[in-house]
Length: 403
Image (cartoon, one colour):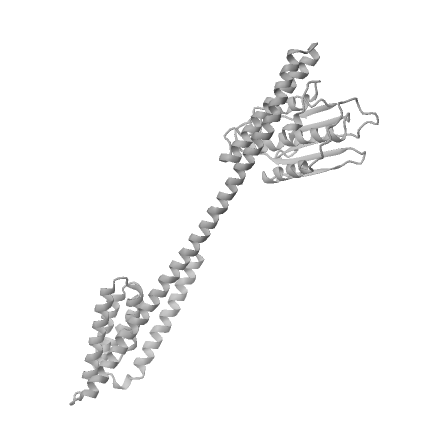
């Protein structure tokens, strides 16, 4: 809108300059004007305002002023407009011939006496200059405008081609990553699932059988999430993106973490949350519990997922106390270096949904992970039990491995 207004103002300025220049030519001959010239010249001046909309009509309206020999600049400007704005070359040719004829008429009408060949040649030269000259300049201007437009189209086409090439390269890389993830990770998960099934079949007691069943189930869940991730890498967002990463599954997540953990779920059934917010909340709890298991085994953990006091945000907080001096007996930790991407990924995930994230050590030597997420406007959440503190049961699994 602002650009259109500037263009209109520029056009008005140009029209004013053009009319002023043509009027200046007329004023220089004020004393020599006859009645006919005074009648046809002023309308020719004001007709120039409409030359962009009706170029051919304005040109023919200015031809009488050219024939009188007192106003030549207005027809020349109209001729330039016709040549620069008319696509049909036949129309430009007819307009040029008409202006040439009017100029020839003016040259002979001004001198009523006998003329020689030099005068004929002079009149023809002037007529060609005043008719073919503006027409040639107009055609040149039109050609340059067309070349500029074609160059802009070519630049846009090249940019589009580069963008398509970049998207193709990204798609190929995503496909390669999906293929590598599927071939390597699914192989190891398949072995885990098969061996846990064999362990379940040969378990000497129910405790080992429950452990084997938990391992098998988490392997199956990890395989399902891997398929979703591979689908996203290959074909874009999956329709079932993170189907189990919902707030209704947070109590199960905490219960299966094998930690001394309690969960405080607020009244969430009366609130509406976007799926992306639910996933961010679920992954926050999941990653925080995984970090506690790695860095502070045996430490008491307090997790809470509840709306804020004002009711405009969802506050997810996982706080653990310092690890006990004598940690509980657990299996030896595999020598796998930590990537350090867990908290960074959580911060990115929370930021993408418009939330705030904080992870820091506490004064008593523990650690706290806190995310404040916006309450969305999606379908109501089918949350799990929204009771007070829920002690975690001694179920099995490494739920953090899904993060």
